[in-house]
Image 1 (spheres, helix red, strand yellow):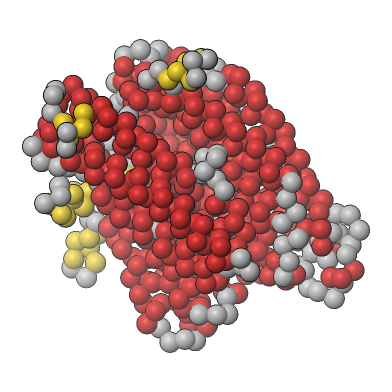
Image 2 (cartoon, rainbow, N blue to C red):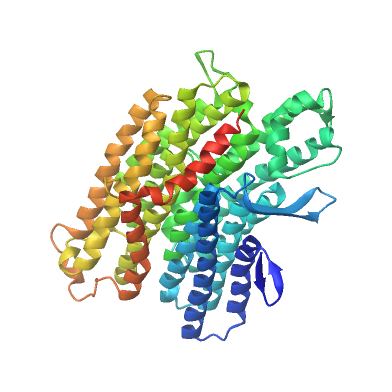
Length: 547
C-alpha cells in the first residue's frame, strides 16, 4: 500500500486510475496549447514513473523470493457480488513487462502529439483514457474486470482514428470498430458462459481468473451430468474457446483476421499508431497467455481431423496460422509503397513470431495438463514462450519507433508515398541514421533487441513444428527485403528535387521521444538479462502449473 494524504492506496489501483484522472484534468484545462502539452506530458510521466516503480518492485520482490503466490501486489475486494465479479488485480512477470512497456510509450506518444493543432486537449485526454484501458487489462485477475478494460481501450482509439486520422479515417475507424466489437461479442458471451457454468460446481457464478484456471479445465468431470441451460458442459467449453480465440486472434492480429490493421495504422495519427502497434496488439497475445491457454489445455491438444486427410490439433492450426502471418505479412509489406502501411504489415509479420511461440506454449501446457508431457517439450516451450513475451516487448519498442519516424517524415512532406521520397539522406542525415538503426532492430540484427526474441522463438519452435518453422524462414528473408526496400526508398537513390526547399531533418522533440526507445533496443540486444529473468520466472511457473 502507498500512503497518499493519509489514505492507503494500493499501487496497481493507483496505476489504473491515475491516467483517467489525468484525462479528466485535461478536459477541464483551458484551451491553451502550451499548458495542455506540458500538463499532459507531466501527468503521463508521473503515471510512467508509477509503472516503472511497479516493475522495479516486482523485480525486487522476485529477487528476494518474497512473492508467496503466483501474483504480486494482489488485491481482491468485492465489486459486483450478484454476478460474482470482484476487483481482483495483481501482476506477474509477464504483466509487469507489459506495464513497463505501456508506461514508457505513453509519454513518448503524448510528446509526439504536440504537433496536433485541432482540439489538442481532447486528443491528449483520449490518449490518457486509452492508457487506463491498457493498464487495466494487464492487471486484471477477474474476467469481468478484464472485459471492461478491454472494451475501454477500444473507444479512445476509435475516436483518435476517426477524428484526427488521414483522408480515409472514417472507413478505417469503422472497420476497426466492427472487427473489434465482433471479437468482443464472442469474448463477452464466452465470459458469461464460463462464469455461470462454474456455478454448477461452486453453487454461485465466479469470474475470478485464478479460481477458474484451476476449476474450468476439469469442470466436465466435476459437474457430472449438470448442464447450463440444457447445454452439455463440453459444448459450453467448445463455444467459450471459439469466442475467446476469435476475440484475441483479431486483436493480435492472427492471419486472416488482420485486414483491419493496415487501414487503422495507415489512417491513425502518429501517436495513435505508436500505441496501437506498441501496446494494443499485445492485448491479444496477453489474452492467449492469461486466459485461452490456461483455461482450455485439453482443447488445444484434442485431435482434429481435417477433411479426412490428416489429423492435427488446435495448437497445430494455431502454429500454421502463425506461419502464414509471418510469411504473408512479409510479402504484403514488401509490396507496399505507403510507408505507414509497410510498417503496419510488418507488425503482422513480427507478431506472427509471437503466435508461433504461443502455439508451442499451448501444446506443452495441454500435454502437461493431460500428463503426457516430457522434459524436452517443456524446455522447448519455456524457450518459445520467453521469446514470445520478449518479442511482444521488443516489437512494442521497434514498431512505436518506426511509426514515429514514418509520422515525422509525413508531417514534413504530407505524403506517405515512398515513390515520392528518395535521397533524403543528404537533407536529413540524423533522421537517416536513426531510421537505419531502428530498421535494423526491426529486422532482427544481432546485437539489437529483435534478434534475441526471434531467436528464442525459433529455437523453441524448431524441434516442435520443424516444417512450419522452415517455411516461416521465407518470411524472415522477406523481412530483410522490405526493410531494405524502405531504407532505399526513403534515404537512397536520386534526391527528389521537389523537396529541396523543405526542412526534412528530424526535430529535437522527435529525437527526445525516440531516444529512450533506441537505448532500450540496444541494451536489450546486448544485455537481455535485465528483463528475461523476470519473464522467465512467470513462464516457468505457468508451465509448471499446467499439470
